[in-house]
Length: 151
Image 1 (cartoon, rainbow, N blue to C red):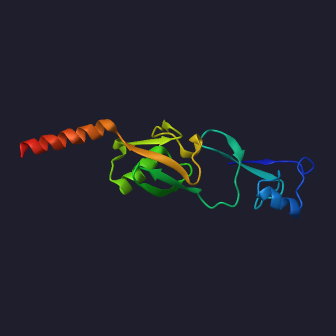
Image 2: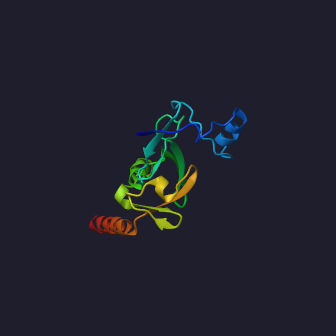
Image 3: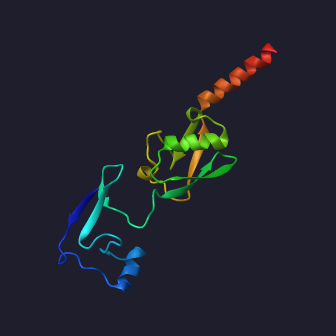
């Protein structure tokens, strides 16, 4: 974490009436609650971007992702900075499909296991489509047929 000092004449603290609009997203409040006077705290995001540190959130932000399997759906709560691979592990406990058997699609594209949810734009209550890998499905079907022919 990097702390930078700034001059009070460059940034003016906003009044209490404009703080409400800044918190609601309507203004450009420069006051940082909880930070020392004259200091801005910075953090580096997983994508490598240096941004002003978010204040007031304890721990990692959690989002709710609705995962549709075609005929049913599951609401899964995960960290906003998790990867699709970590989401597959959570879904394997819910659906019974192994992570290697799953294909996750978001906005019409299959996502890689290393892709971070927040980097591709997954937000709270967004929908992700879960498909079973056709190759694995075919292998299971052939194995079931072979077992049926043996007995």
